[in-house]
Length: 299
Image (cartoon, rainbow, N blue to C red; front, side):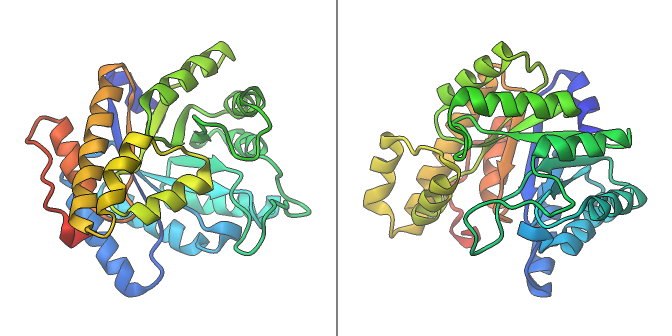
């Protein structure tokens, strides 16, 4: 089922993001996580794609297993990095052959050790070009990424939104945002996007904090700001994993409540291949019970 069709219900969509495991042991553990989260009935899950296509085979295998074995709708990430147009077309054919209906089209980050993006000589330089190529097949529902606090390479918010508009005009049906921690940032971003003529659903991306050092690094990489109030709570207890997790999960639960209350079309959880934080928050949102902060085993 296409993600674009899921919005027709008018109900908020909930989705989870995973990354391909590095080895067989990690793969076994990840499938356990996926099956645990399946019981929460997510609308879809997505699987990331390594720089330079370094996880190409693992991404393709994982999305196919999630859809065909686990029975969850799966979205395959696809990037421009390191691929020629012919290689992209071959990947698209393989995804279609495996029954995948949804793709998240991304430019992608430079490979490890490189600081600037360099397209393949016969490849795509921008995500809107990749989106347009995918759209030509009229086979996939396409999602793209949005940056509530601006892509770190963009010179201005307006420039960033112009690029986003190009991606939507090229064939994207929805947008998933990068992580953020201030809901006003998200709603300001949505308002600016609408002023640029972007009308498709914009799903907020949320990453529950379970490690203070880790979230500082992630936030720095994507240009997300950690609120002083959250830092002030986390910093004194940063060496206490249980306390950090308790603060992080409660903060994310409140954040998600606020987003949905103000009309966000759903929540996309960056799971980091863990289950409990996402599980507790989503169960809380669906009114099953309050978040359980005893999540030390899953950190």
